[in-house]
Length: 520
Image (tube, rainbow, N blue to C red; front, side, top):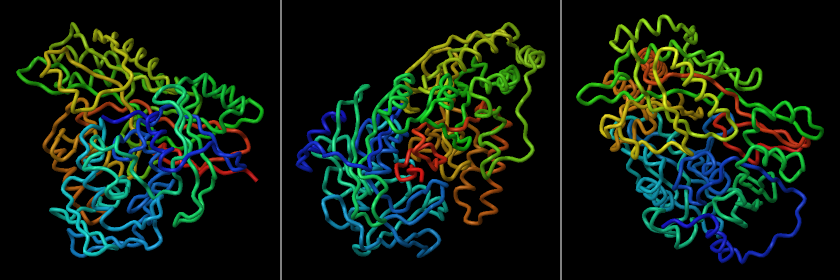
């Protein structure tokens, strides 16, 4: 069993001979909406866990704040053949215990991440089909069944840990000790568990291969309640908080000593519709029904739930601010009459009942978003029964409604833009769910179209950038026409902080302490 973060405090004390740290000048306290579930970098793919892993571990290649690939533990790389990559490790990288990072550690980490089965959203999708070998201690070779241009984006997500700090998978080994990383920070203290009092304290290491990190000590505090985060910031108990509540943004902008910073529109809130059909009877499997639902949604009204200028109606997967967004495409205008016509034409003029799931995303008005959608759907006699859950279950634990005997289902979900988008977004949200390849890992509606799958596969295999772009654009356009999911709102990320700080925000929404600066 995997222990809580509270149990990790005992392990850290044993590893480092922990004593309460003395006061340090360069200290940063970050209030986070969600707590990381583990210090193990191969356990979860959540934002909180990835944020912590960003500081504690290195990867073969890294992704900077602008979502560009940069050298990591691999100082250089290239092709041995169209389907074989070779990575050369830097000589000055060491783990937190002082031992050098070797190719064997990389192979061990890849196998460990690939075989993790306990995680709700793990990392195996990025490793399937890849075969790793080590010609020598400073070289890693990766072979794929066919040319695979997405290699760097995939490997930039896999943290490297020291070999033999655990067994084949974190779910079996975490109690034996924490994985040892080589990142610019190391764990110094853990307080509490996965409750509202939990905190993780990191110590900056001046010996890191990239140079000394920006902060001597960084504390990540779990402050799930919006008012609690705001209070901690105003009273200077936190230096920066993520996801300031919408109702408090103007107040924080007017507060002396506090500033609010906005990032790019990297969050898409969308509606998924359960489309799987076995034996008929699922109205959502009919594109006319999906079109009717899209037509009755007033996306401009939904955007108004966020502060002025922060959200915009979504017509596609990516905000127009991002490379790869489709040109000349506008959000669907609300038209209840046209929606009713389609519903009648599909034989459901009297409407139907829909199970509607909303996950409570702290800091965002998602519950209100769900309530507004329920009201809009009622205009076409679709009775949506709102069901609030803490988090949406993983796809592996969310079978199609047609297989469970439940009524048709839909739900609200959101997506943070990541490197490789829109292609990564497509293979996660639109591709037919495939447990063997990990494709469709976020396809909650169980949408399936073999033509779209083929286009995504062609894009993934295309080495020529122009051809790859063309396949991706075509797949994205057709998925929108098919209404695989219904984009609703693009939202800019937000942080609030003491006015002595400034942040260079990451487009993927992760918090990088080294991208938080003291103002001159």
